[in-house]
Amino acid sequence: MFFTRFLHFVIVFIFSMSSFAQSDEFAEETLYSALDSLDEIIEQKEQFASAWETQTESLRQKALHSPASQRSAAFWQLFDRYRRVQTDSALHYLRILQNLPEVKNNKNQSNLVEISLADIYGVSGLYITSLNILTSLDASEMTETTRARYYHTLRTIYGWLSGYTPNDEFKKSYEAKISEYRDSILRYDQDSLSRHIVLADKYLVNSDAKNALRLSFYDLDASDSANKRYIYSNLAEGYRQLGDSARYTYYLTLTAIDDLRDGVREYMALPTLARQLYSVGDYERAYRYLTCTMEDASHCKARLRAVETSSIFPIIDRAYKKQEESKRRSEHYLMIALVISTLLLGTLLFILRKQNRKLGTARQNLMASNERLQSSNEELAKTDKLKEDYIAFYLDKCRGYLVALQKYRRELLKLAKSKNHDELLKRLNSSELMDEEQQRFYKDFDESFLNIHPQFVERFNALLADDKQIKVKRNELLTTELRIFALIRLGVTDTTAIARFLNYSTATVYNYRSRIRNNSKSDKAVFEDMVMKL
Image (cartoon, rainbow, N blue to C red; front, side, top):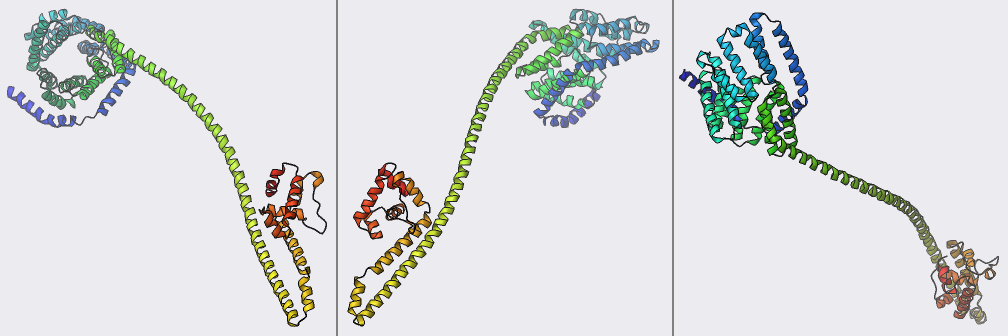
């Protein structure tokens, strides 16, 4: 027997190595996913409860209409349904079982009813009553399976007593009892999965977390949800001992998920998880999980869980309310910031809109300037063409004058060679040629200037008083006065230069300039400046 169990453990150890190694690949995202799943289950708790109630009602009807030979099995099934869900109903079905003839007349069945009564009283916090019932039973009269159940119940009750006694001496006594009954379970429990769960618990008590984890991982895939929660619980405790907070929280979460999904209302994982989340600052979940625990403990009438929860709930409640107050304050500040931001944004939009309007106006002005510039460029192009034309014109004139002078020189030379001195002197004393060329020069100048500035005469007269307007004769283009100020318009402002250009005396030019300035409508000091802008 011993050799067989030892060999079985060696096989468990070898096969569990791969599972344990795989567990090291755990990522925190897995924890967050599990917590989200737990949140969803709590939100849907009423739906799970409704489904559980529907299934239980079906079992109830089956039990009520079962033949006498099957009634006890049906009522045991109903008891198991209510055992960790509602203690009042569980007790009700135990009372029914107590009165069934097939139970009364079967010592093993009677012992199971008494053990189950002790278990339910323990859940209700009646530990002394539970122990009185259990100590009144004779374990030697029980089958191995019933005896294992008996020791399981004793170990559980002493575990509750140890966890909630403030006295160190009593605690040590209870822990000794726990160790004794744990060994008894391992001695009599024939269910390998159940034995492994207890054995893993023993490893954990002895701080052998690694062996507990290996054994638990080995059994994990083979277990149903009812046993998985105990395996998850052992895994959580193992990782707690190893200081792995993430995995500890993860397996506590899986334990709580299986409890709630199966309709269990007396549990330890969810309040423990709430305390763990509180320690890492997740007050909202801790508050929600403890609230769920208190509701379920009240429904189940599990005094132990109600006391356990009430001891820490005020602390978490204060932290949660403080967090909510801080959140509301943050939301308030955020709202103020949002309003200010909105106002600033509105102001910015207003400024941008105003700037856009200015930009639009500037764009229009720029377009107008571009159009003017283009027009100016066109005018400059025309002016450049005009300049080229007039340069060519005056070059041609200059060449004409040279030809005329050459012709005149030859005529004089011819007269000199023929010794016609009288005609030669007559020619030399005559100014007819110069007068003709002078008039031709004035005519060419007038035409050229008026081609460049066709509105010059009208604009010039507009600067003079109404009774001092200059009248141009029919056969003239410009008068002497107009010709002088035409040169000023072209930028020739020096009196001597004007006199030399027009073949006038300096005094004549000066007198004309002075007289015209005196005829100006506006200030005579700026008259010539105004002429230059015509």
